[in-house]
Image 1 (cartoon, rainbow, N blue to C red):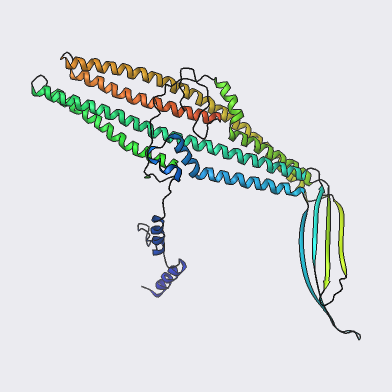
Image 2 (cartoon, rainbow, N blue to C red):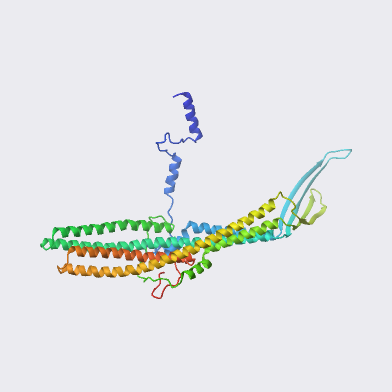
Length: 479
């Protein structure tokens, strides 16, 4: 290797801290030992543990427990809460402009004069405290505009925190019903598998005594294999849904937990409220829409603050001090200065006018965003309303379909046992029954999810998962 190449290679290693990049595009980079140690240290970090009041119930959680865990652990709610706290302190800062500011200064001065014209050199040490006062007595909208803007921003942050809470509840409910629905589907498919096992055994026995052909045995075995495949696929989907629910609670996907019961026996129903009444409720209750309105108020207040900055203001300033001479018992005395002054902005290169116009443009932009978001809220409620109505109708139809499929399967089973029906008829009826079971489960849990989505879009979704929306009298309550 040429000396120059050796020198460049050594320089490259030094420039990268001794750890160069991969030697070629098709070669993996080897991390340094320090990075490997950091990865090993991360593996040893303790996993998140549930709070003591819920740890004992971890094997039998209910929806309220799941929501409680999620709201405690979710980083989005924690960040929104901290933003709200910061906005409250910003409002306190803005209100502080209405009060005087005081500062205490201290000084220590050593003086020495040179001897001149027969005078001896003098050396003195002077020290003393000094109190400074500044108070904006009167302005024409600057302080009040800034205070109102900070107050509106505080309200916007609080409304945003509420909106984040509702969004987390919706996400957790969706994950919860997905997991519970998948578990119910697995139970239904296991029942279908048991029926397929019975059919296969009956076909084999009939074939052994010569009253059934080998084709019937093969058909029963095929149906049994299909039922087993459905069970195995749903078992995998169940673990995926279980992990998603754990993550929504703020825990690792492999945390040991389970859900207590299936909220599945509820009779579904359509809404007792019109879409227009729900839209009216949403306009009143949506926290994110209220946050958008508060943003408009803050932007308008900043216009007032910008205008006030270009108008005269009255200030009071004062300085109060004591002076002490070192090594001299006598105190020369105190001193103070008090000043009332008026400040009139005359010219600032057009910056005052530019700030006013900028604030006005931002206020118009905030108003336009609020108007556009209002239209979006109306559309969301409109869509969720008809999605829920469709889900309710689908659930009722799925109930009727399951009842018919059960009757058909019972008739086909009776005819087959009596020797009047074929195995094909029985397998067809049982396949229809299995599909009807799955459709009913999907329809019912889609109804639960649609109700949660509608409550969220209306802005009334409770932190305990409740959905205070009036349903028709034949409903026994979904939450």
